[in-house]
Image (cartoon, rainbow, N blue to C red):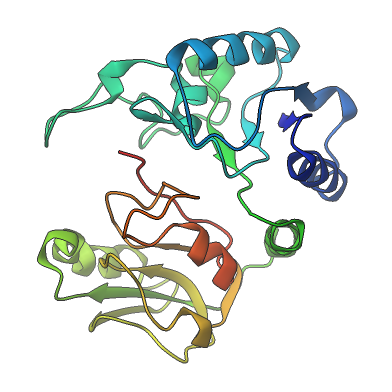
Length: 254
């Protein structure tokens, strides 16, 4: 289902275009109205919003697509995880401690609502319709395209954000026969035209304007604030990846 904020003109345009390009049935377009522009909702505000959406969600709906970049947070949770699991502070950790278990992690389940009672959520996030249109078009273009791109795994000098580098060799062993996996010890990737995956550890990533991401490409920079989409917290927003040509990214809001 596509969730549209009728009080946000950009959300309305994004929802209409996404539904048209992805051939979403009209009954799977859910319309709610709430004041736009806030970055964070309280749990009470979210509960009221979620109740209105639940009322309109047909039983066959397995996932949600939100059509805004803000709000991106519900108290200590990202808004996408709050939609997926319901708001629950158990998904928030004080320090490096385990959070509540995510039943969808590493799961073979193909119908998450029917089988697990949860609806994964994503945001079609953009600050202009032109950016959103480009993002949606890349998603459509990537369908069944089997692109011949490469995965770039960068080991950087930012020690706190370079923790994934220890698993890069395992990634290469798992996927190296399917796509080229390039393990690089450098802080930035520049002038590459075949980027399908780009994983790094950097608060702010340079050189994005020199890259060509293939339709469907995923990129991430492992920061504490990458999911703070429209806030300037001193770390790069995940929106910068999408604006540079990636089709998917992610990040934390706390």
